Image (cartoon, rainbow, N blue to C red; front, side, top):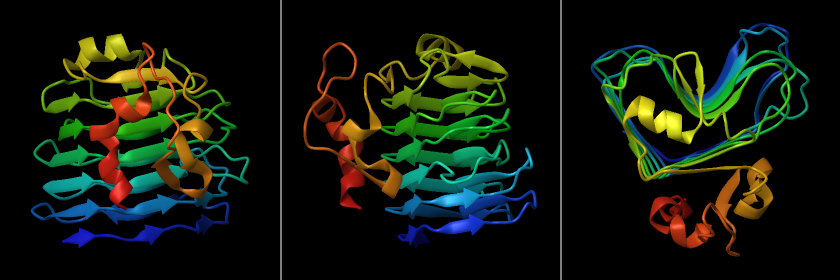
Length: 248
């Protein structure tokens, strides 16, 4: 099964604690699917409950998921609420496998509470193969932290990650490892991965310069080159990593 759709304009306008998501897989243990070339954006939640949230993809069942060439843009614009935000939230069992490649995930907006936000969150100790993705989180405010990637289970077995780009508002909070904030170097040591990945903050690489229109869900890269770390041009540096998303 392969889904190729544009999903936007989903709203929870009530105070009910709920999680809004574009794609949700919550039952079954032996199936899987390919999610490719989807554009997901403008999912919003007005609930003031700290257990409320929004997610581009919320996976809590299944055995094998291939997720590639997707654009996910979330910021909960218009609501001064304390919601959790995940580009992709993976709650699957340790035996499950997620192959994550050539995706561009953007998280923005302002937080008004203690909840965290993440481009990708791995729960439990499911197997993750994450390569050639861009995780851009410039969410600010509140008392929580805003990460590009994270794993609530600080177990490196089964986590294979490399050639990714991590951009955050705080370079000391590139990733969540268990309960600890990690910069790129610490994350590399903790996981044993991402040796060839790069990180920068959103002032060095602004979303306006990088994307055509992150707020409108258009995560195609702008054509003008700009610098990401060590003076390298991002268009050249990320050519093999992100141009597949341009096929959307």
